[in-house]
Image (tube, rainbow over all chains, first blue to last red; front, side, top):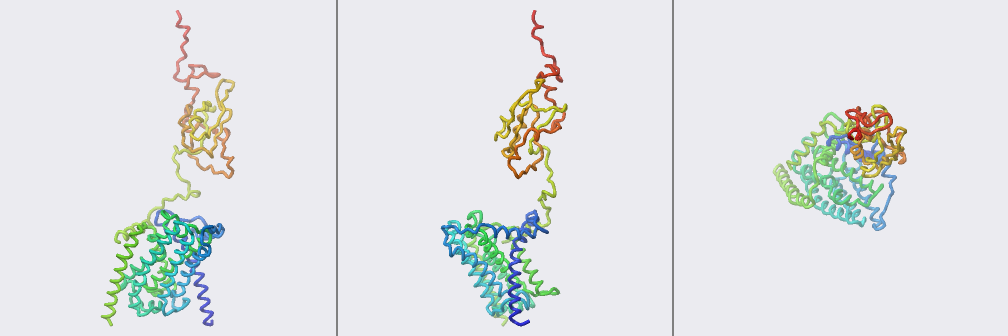
Length: 317
Length: 171
């Protein structure tokens, strides 16, 4: 098989797998939430209710695709595509296994950060273009929240970059051969996880869409497949953040006995399950609490982590 | 932070709890006998209709879903000519059962009354009338009440003295 054919096969398979898994995730999440809330979750359609996702997609696709007459049409249509596209693009740099992955960028980590930052535009523009007060408030919140959490999201990863000495994600995985970075970078892991949840707009940090105060926040006016794209984008985002946590802190595909791909998928799934548990367990903070938490706790914590890691790396050199 | 982690651990342990869901169509829920469900009209132990068409149920009904027309048979016994309950209006409050002086109208623990056609929710007397006595097996209104009908005069009922003849008191 020629090199380009291998790349294309990788590309298409990864795209299909990410899409399929993200769709499946909506069902997995509901089942897991059920498990943790003493109920069953969707278990009627097909074996274990797994065909629920088919029913849901049919429903989403056949709903009226409505653009409100007061909306800014071009931006309104553009917004949901951005979130899906950026989340999928970021997946290009994720090293899934030694020979699986779309591109091997030497600035892979920066590319990931850039793409997750671009994803914010989707939410902000969606909230703005809807021309609806609730949507606008959701968009505002998204902008402020992303800005606050973006700051230490990047900084939290600099410790990993220092230890690995590279921005290349494959080099970072390789550098964890002896010891996963979750041990020396425990502070980095904690802060990156919090930032990641905020980036993915997941409960407890789903203030942009907080449905009990803002109807549905930035996607109040969205219906049909436009809403579906936001939905898919969110689930791809969760998968992406989980995959990045695994890559950066839990040794990516490294692990004994099982093949690398299985290790990667297993670890990613466990992280995703933790995200769902977080949603099942924790209430949403107030907006000022969220801001105070980001700037007054998380950012100093990241800087401390950076200082300690820098000192250790310097003294070791 | 510690609190949040503790919460997460407690929620995680819920994985091993018993499910509270009753898988309804496969697994029927246990319904208490006093459940206020589908309304029926019962008969007395002799197999006659208990309803005496007094209209108290229709008067008590807060949503006016009960309609009936009183008539009498050849023995002077009152009964409803028609008895109609519109279950698409009924709120299953049970006031009709409370109002009924003869224990004729009763609510039962049946709730599976779904219909595709709304008109099918209007129940006529033949849909409502059952062959049994319902919740009160021994009760027979005309056997305990001092009302005279054909075949039973005043004073013939249980625990009843014959009516006093005022003329016998004359000097």
